[in-house]
Image 1: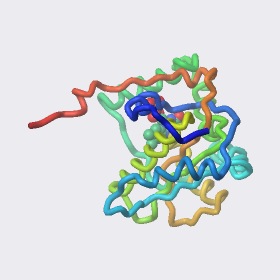
Image 2 (image 1 turned 45 degrees about the horizontal axis):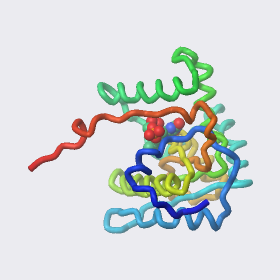
Image 3 (image 1 turned 90 degrees about the vertical axis):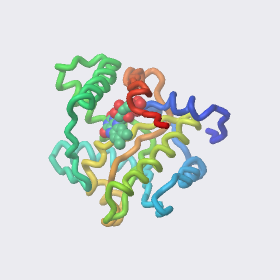
Image 4 (image 1 turned 135 degrees about the vertical axis):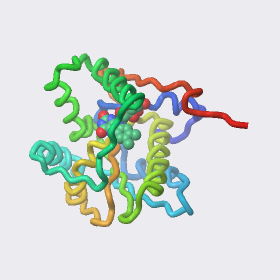
Length: 225
Ligand SMILES: Cc1cc2nc3c(=O)[nH]c(=O)nc-3n(C[C@H](O)[C@H](O)[C@H](O)COP(=O)(O)O)c2cc1C
C-alpha cells in the first residue's frame, strides 16, 4: 500500500466507483492514519472542521457485522437525520438508472425482490470490507456543515482511490445510528450522516462491474459571462 501517486486527479475522479465486494486484506492502524490524515485538509465553513470519522476494523468491525443485520431486520432503526428526499422527474430517472446499472451487473431482475433485498442487506455486513468508516456531524449543525462533511468524505474517497483502494459510501449505515454509537462507544452528541466501507476491491465480483453514467456537463454546469 502506498499513498504516493502520479495519477492525475481527473483520472482518479474518473476511476472511483462505489465498490460492493471487497477482498479481506486489511491495513494496519499506522497505514490507516498515514492514508487518511491528508483528508483533514478538506475545506469547511470558517475552518470549523465539523466532522468526526470513526473507523472500525478487526474485532470492532466483526461485532458490528454481527449486530447490524439483526438490528435492521428487527426494526431497531434510528436515524439522526431524516430520510425524506422524494425523487421525481430527472432525479427519479437517474435513481432508476443507477439501480438498473447495479442490479444489471449483478444479474438480478428488477422484479426479483428477494435477490434485491439480499443485495441490500449486504450494506450491513459492509460488502465484506475489512474497514468501515462512520462520518459524524457534531450535534446542532445542519445543511451548511453537512456540506463540509461531504467534502471531507470525498477527500477520503479520493485518497483511497489514489492509493489503489476502493470504497462505498452508505446512507444505509445511518439507519442504525444508535447501534453504531453504542458498539463503538461514540458520544451521543455526534450525529451519524453515513458510513463508508473500504478496502481492496474484489476484481471478480459481478457487483463491481457496475458503472454509473453522468449527465452531460452542459446540463449541470452553466458558464456565464
Ligand atoms: C451519501 C451517499 C450515500 C450512499 N448510500 C449508499 C448505500 O447505502 N448503499 C449503496 O450501495 N450505495 C450507496 N451510495 C452509492 C451511490 O449509489 C453511488 O455513489 C451512485 O450510484 C454513483 O455511482 P458511483 O459511486 O459508482 O460513481 C451512496 C452514495 C453517497 C454519496
